[in-house]
Length: 293
Image 1 (cartoon, rainbow, N blue to C red):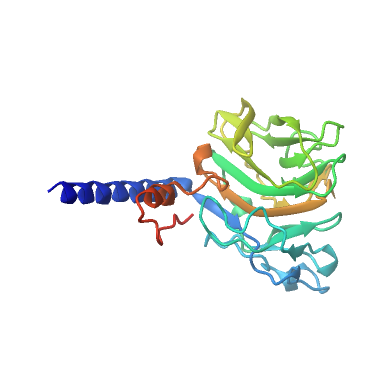
Image 2 (image 1 turned 120 degrees about the vertical axis):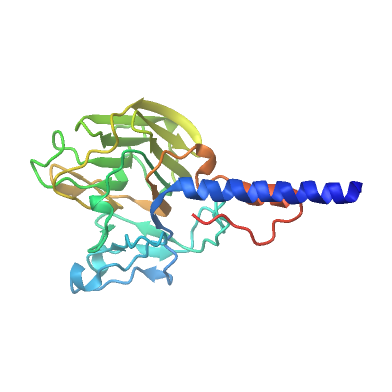
């Protein structure tokens, strides 16, 4: 009887663990997820015939069709084998490639992507990033404005996730809220070169928070989510924009970029070991259950 009771408790615990994992998936609301596993080693699939001929060369693994493109070979980042880890802690998925960026190399939302038109009242934007150099403004995730003057307040673009070039070498997120007001949060300490960081910007429609390796760095008031421009504008990886001009290029590597339309708890970030599997592993039953994101 005791053995049967024990087995029953284990079974129920496993179900609870799996249910928690599935609930987390449902709440995660992944809108776009670029894993950069397309490969092979070398350059992104692009050529010299212009952007329309080389659209959607970087796959959105969320299934929502928000694929990315690059303009041509000479603007293309490269697939490399340097990664933050051989697996993604939050999903258990194998991780073989990242993208290596240098000045004048970038990727951005392609034709057919719904991301430029998406409204984010709540959001989580996270990624792994490593800087080859510091000391300059480097935007690794951005959103363009529509020109100069654009739709946003001042010459700033609508969203920047970046290393600061003011001498502090800190991480910063800057965004326009629904009232077209600029807000920013910077990290507590400086970044270092050749170090993989997990970074996340989170907003619940009232505040915006910045996390570095899962640790809250600071927060600011933020009204009603991201500014929704009347003219849809592209999201970028590898550069920013100021006054309608491209710039602030990333000199470094980026991996596992995920957009969610909910304010994720830090326990659900990609850098946190998958809780469903952890529970089942303790019970000796974590064989194939992986939380899909």
